[in-house]
Image (tube, rainbow, N blue to C red; front, side):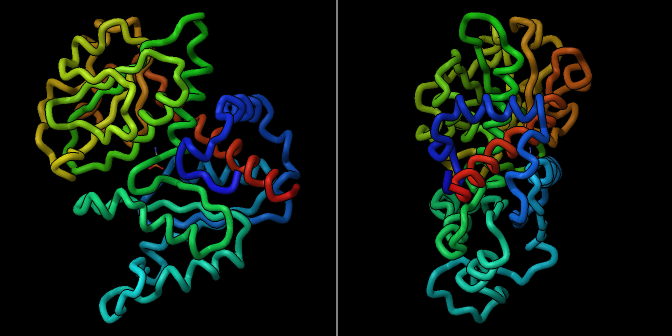
Length: 319
Ligand code: CP
């Protein structure tokens, strides 16, 4: 593996899931694989789970991880080619990324979208500039449009939880939120679940919250949440802002919040969310604190997803 930006980089991702579960069973079995190797982790935006789980994963493989909060501590970066840098940006990624390539063996980047210009965000300019100029493998720690470490984690969590000999029904449901949020998690979840192909996948959201079909193609989309939830084995709850009329909040109807009453429509579904979650806005306390919630198990699995990905890249570097 040379980079990890989407499901397209995962190769045989069933093997990746198996390796991740292997690390969950024996976290230190490859504790020398990353000896004398360094992971740089650049955050242009906040994070708790991604930051810590990836650091723990690197440590389990014997790697050193260095975290750098670009937004707080670094020079303001310029990403546009041929920019005249007479404004607020101090350093071009063309100059900064090759330096990072000298310090590290693998680079992880978190960059959120602006949610102002769809074309810019969906071009993934920021992470692509790091790939172009760093000269070392780059891992997405969540980019403008996708969150592959989260989605790999989600497949791991579903795989270890669902043991019946049939395909589970998985429902991705939109939920209300007070802020304008990216489409990264639902895009990425849709992309990975579609590529996995081992489920009956349904997406439900209010009218005009359609996601990019590039990621959702193959899923059944319904606008009646109650109908969608019927017989679900897993319900993934997540807010996103509009994609077509980009980055807007059209609806904040609290009736879309996941509640215990709605859980009763499902097949005793397990409830998932990537976290952080707005309690009693996206999901009710009774659902999050109830026995059906697997959000903590899910977040815990972030370590094994990151460890499996780092290990694949390290193995590629040592051969
Ligand atoms: N789910 C997730 O990526 O969490 P953080 O933003 O805390 O990393």
